Amino acid sequence: MDFTFTEDQLLFQESAREFLLNEITAEKIRGLWETDSGRSDELWRQLAELGLSSITVPEEYGGLGMNELDFILIAQECGYVALPEPLVHTALVAVPTVLAISSLKDEWLPKIASGSAKVIVGLEANLLVEDAHLADLLILQSGEELHALKPEQVQLQYNQSVDPSRKLYSIDWTPSKDTLVAKGPEGRAIINAALNRGALGVAAECLGLSQRMIDLAVDYTSERQQFGKPIGSFQAVKHLMSNVAFKLEYAKAPVYRAAYALAHNLDSAAVNVSQAKFAASEVA
Image (cartoon, rainbow, N blue to C red; front, top):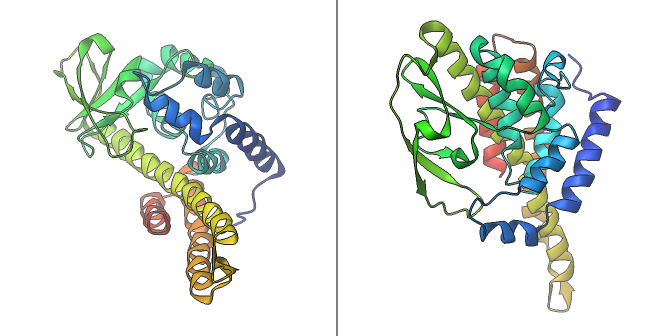
């Protein structure tokens, strides 16, 4: 199995990195904390114009037709800048979920691809749903059923997070036959797939966050001085930094392996994702 990324994948990552580093600054993120939504419509429009919101949408619905392995490097870059917008959720969770539900895909996939609509998936494994206030459509779990609801069909209760960038909501809603879009074995399969892809997204973002923390620490230890020397020259600090960098490099392979497994529908995908989530979370 070849884990070397293609030239196109690496070029796409490079262009995404350049944009994100220029646009997603600490000052801009802190500024969004003071807004009602905590999000930027202008930034989402820019992400859509770059094709990032449509990357996993099939070509027949106006997307780029790429898969989890194509997107995994972009997800890392989102983690590197701590992107508040729900781009990783859209590409890895919302799009595959909508694609698996025949009654939704024709209407909603073109809207997601164009950036004109946001779909948020809320599963019972998480009591709170992130970015529910942004959703033009909510896909929510009830047992082995999935229901599609418009904003006017739900009541949201904001729950403050320790991270001001995270907008978490509990949702009051009532399942009905009119909102039901999947059930039984089909519903369970879609739910499991969404959980796996969500965990993969978290793992990829953890890789990016870890690299950013290492980079910040290297800069700091090169400038901060003690006893007339940069603290980065001290053996104890060197060991600590190298241990983290070592773990990060070894966490990348499981994450890329999990993305490959999901992209190719391998039977081992759930195990691969669990390994990736464990390794990347430990490093972060």
